[in-house]
Each structure stands twice: as structure tokens, then as C-alpha cells.
Length: 313
Image 1 (cartoon, helix red, strand yellow):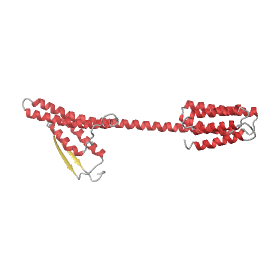
Image 2 (cartoon, one colour):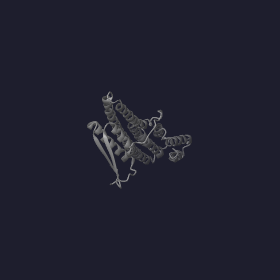
Image 3 (spheres, rainbow, N blue to C red):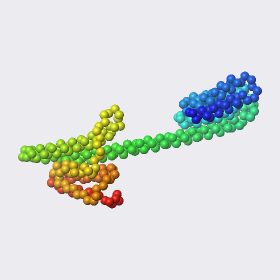
Image 4 (cartoon, rainbow, N blue to C red):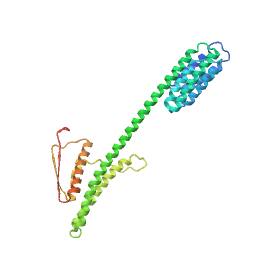
């Protein structure tokens, strides 16, 4: 708005100079009012574009209706200047109506020139018409580009939300599928041996408790991340996502389901990006889940983790 007042001052002084030009006694108050309207309309065009444009339209209409008021290009240029803001900030219908009003003002000025036979008015009419058309076309182009940019932002946000939902769905699938498979196997085993071997049944119940506790911790971590978006909810305690360092616990839980699992690691262990670390853990977790689900108790699984010298290896 501060920058808008610079052209507002220039246009206001130009309008005042044009209104006082020549020998027209008693026109000082009218010229001051016209200059003040031009100044305020241009300076406040960002806050109230439609009222500012309407004030300039009334101003030009009065100038065209009275033979005593000089036809000045400044008021027409100010009107075109505000028309640009109306076209950018308002709806398409409002911008078209504003353009129609501006062109009607040009026609009214043309009629006033011919009827009142005002000298040297063809240049203001031509410049005003050209400025109106250019201002509207430029404003329409700017509004279309802004709408397109907003559409791209909405699409990007929607795509990001979809990707996050898919990631959470995969996480939930990995946690629930593995944990429930182990719990189901342990529960079936405990039910089978509860009469003949209470100690084994008690061990199965302990495995169920440990597995379910770990699953709840992972679910609480994921739900805690989601609840961070709502400032009104109490933040759930967060924990880092599982990685290859959690393999011993994963293998221990799988062994509790009656699967003989061995872990072999070769190469020098090194830090890897978090995404690769989580992905590797989830791949092994899914593989062991399939072993528990489809092979059943007594099966054997070998987990081999190799550390290369570089990401390419």
C-alpha cells in the first residue's frame, strides 16, 4: 500500500493540475475534490478495489456529463489502474462488469467530446481505451496464473496426503500382520498344551504378552505422529522407527511362535539412511510373518544381512 501511494500522489497532482489549467474561475474546489478522489482510489485499491473503481467511474461520469469540467486522461488512467486490481482480486463476473463500466465511461467521454466540442480530447479517449483493455487483459492473465499455481499446490498437497496414507497403511499392515500371526500361533499352541504342559502354556502366554506389548508400542508411535497435527490433543510419547538394530527382538518373537530362525550378518555394519534402514527391517519382518503364517511351527528360516562397502554394493 505504501508503494501504491506513490502513483496515487502523481495521479492526484496531475488531475489537480489539469483541473486548474486555463481560465476557469470557481473550479478550484471541484479540481481539489477530483484530485482527492483519484488519490484515495489509487492509494486504497488493494483494500477496497471495487469501491475505488466505482468512485473513479462516478468521477469520470461527472466529467463527461458536465461541459465545464475538462476531460483529463489522468482519471481514465487511474480507472484502468484500479481495473487491473479488480480483475485480479475479484471474480470473473465482477471483472467483466468492471470492464463494461470502463468502456461505457469511454463512450460517454466520446459523446461528451462531440456534443460539447471540447478541444484536444481525442488523445485522452484513445489512451483511456487502450489502458482499459490492457489493464483488464493483464489482470485476467495474472489471475489465471495464480489460480493455476493454487491448483498445483492443492494437487501437491493431496498427493502428499495420499502417499502418507499409503505409508501408514503399509506400516500398520506390517505391525499388525506380524504381531497377530505370532499371537495366533502362540495362543493355539498354549491352548493345545495347557492341560499336559502348563509350563509351556505359561511360556506361550508370556510370548503373547511381549509380542502384543511391542505391537501396541509401535501402533502408539504411529498414532502419536498423527496426533501431533492436533494441538488440542495430548502428545503421545514418540519413539524412533524400527531398524536393523531391532532384528534380535524380531527374531526372538518369531522363535516364540515355534519357528527356528538364524541370523547371519556379513560385512562391516555401517549407518544407512533411515528410509533404507526401516525398509530393510520391514522386508525381513514381512518375510518372517509369511513363514509363521504359511509354514507353521517347526519350520526354519535363515535371515542373512549383508553390508556392502558402498550403496552401490
